Image 1 (tube, rainbow, N blue to C red):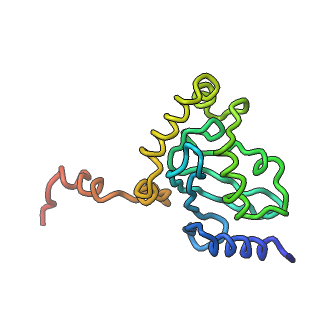
Image 2: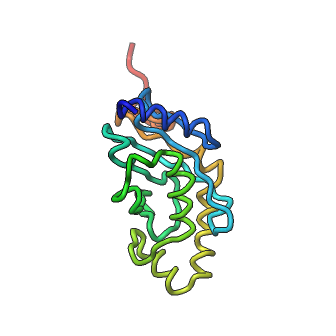
Length: 183
């Protein structure tokens, strides 16, 4: 490949042509969401997550940033931010890998084989080491509560401006309280 931008386009098209739903953010090819299904034969099976992917300017020479948008219970995923602690993505990334590898290999491996000794979610790691069946039950509860298709579709887009107001906020603004202006 002659340039990072062509490689970025090729990898993104390959991901779009696979079985993953891809939602672009803005007009560029650097930020997008991917719908990711939990792997079979895991407590995450049946769950679906919206993953935010950010490609750096130096992609594929620098790894993409990956984060879960809807909640997931996992020792190596921060429960609040959704950031992923994944050595292959964060430290050992190689230009030989592509975006399909992230969703077909790296993330399924992370969910199938959590590493509680390197946690971002200490509670999940402790429960996994102390009581594996209780940990798996908690994972399933999170899947049922936060990882359904309707949860992904209801996940709010990132606010592009602090000035935007919802209809409810607009309807409850000070103008309504103050009354009509005199003509």
